[in-house]
Image 1 (tube, rainbow, N blue to C red):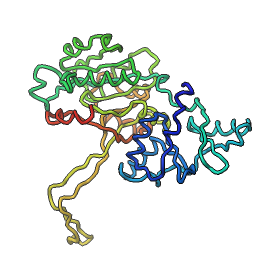
Image 2: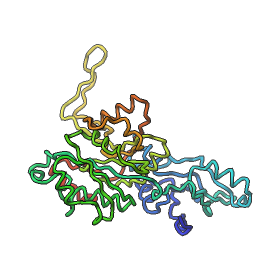
Image 3: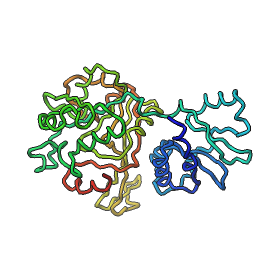
Length: 354
């Protein structure tokens, strides 16, 4: 990464009164992976994308201020100590970020020290994408009467093409399509991937294997893949895969499930009973937020060894199997746009973020 990339570090300096939403916009704009927080020009801490996702899991919302989630004990170096080689060596060894704030004697940020070994470089990650495309798309009938769900068009392109182009844009070149229903039509359209400047391989299920069973067909692959992004073919999101993988690596997970909150409205008045079974409160049509799987996962390729080849299993059952075996599974909350294209009405929502 060239030093020119870091010249705009001042754009990453924000005020403690920023909201989570504004901070996300700043992180996306600068691509520096961290924001530097100040109060009356004095450096008071840092905040990262991971800090924001953890806050949202705890119940914060995008309009909340960042003051309660700032890392207020960040490492830094005073400008007068830049020539102290022993101090610099110790600082870099214990610093988890690739950018170290340089402060004046007044505590104002005057520059940054670059430690590129801590910079998350997605281009160096051995990662491939697996797309589960075998479903029949019954909820999208009659659109799926003669074509698979993966070829239903959104914004002029098949859903699956949008997924492939997104991955390609982020630097991923290898795609694995797990097929069953209308396999030949999918293969005829995408072929080997050359027209999209990627490489596509096909793994056809002999019988439907569920949302995870088809991944067992990938175990025969002989390559250097370390990580596998798994996504359903009906999921569209502008979540950056690099953010998901960085979260996965930093938390030392074996599997990371992208998640989001889903609001469920109860159409009835709900009665609350005390220990004597007497009503003490009635809530009119309450709403509940549930944390749900967003249908996008990052997996260490090695976890596929826990799948039995050609055995039908859904992703929820597979993840529960891994949990029983004490495999570390984490979740990364999505604050980005996300859509599960399960019905024709969902197709009308797509213009919100494509």
